Length: 295
Image (cartoon, rainbow, N blue to C red):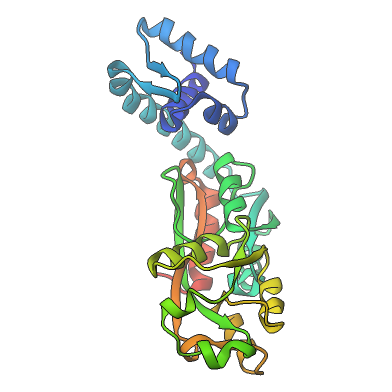
């Protein structure tokens, strides 16, 4: 029995699917299948039942899973402890960023990190919330920022703040919609948001919560594009409060109900749950807490 076999066992149990587990482990599906088969032969009993949609644990598998998870946790803690004994942290840390850098306080955070840990090199990669979350899950980046509610148990979060969102209107529609209710607002043309945008889930959740299904005028993936289309009178859209108020001040857009917040979403720092006790992650979180003035 090898540690890598137990890791494969736990990952398959978490995902309920061999292909998804193989992707997370950076292995081929036959390799995952072979490792599970080797464990089953060593244990003398099947660990999974196969069915068309995936796999599920047998009763024996359910009983053995907690012990396998504990062994992996002990192994990770041993590795992290060994790393912490090596002295000053060093190496490259890859961080996924989203949206506007100033909103994330990237400058003050990385300046503090550099001051405290001069041997750490940070590499940032810009994307949207969905892509950053997937990269953290696949462990191709160390950590990142995420706007919205984290749906995965194998990803841990450090809440930083809440971001408010306003409904932004073209000036041409202001007379009709500035103080409209949601039923009327839902009949207006809306700018759809691409699934690859951080605003996608936020906009969809808002529509569901208000029981509206607007006619979408295309789908767009950047806040800057939404802003230009609102100015041009193409349609209505949700914008981050800070952006919305800045452009409403010069009259290029109008805010629904004077800038009333339509919804909020948590801004979070995310990382793999397996790295909760990793000194490098602890170092990143400690500096973030100071910059964001968190308890």
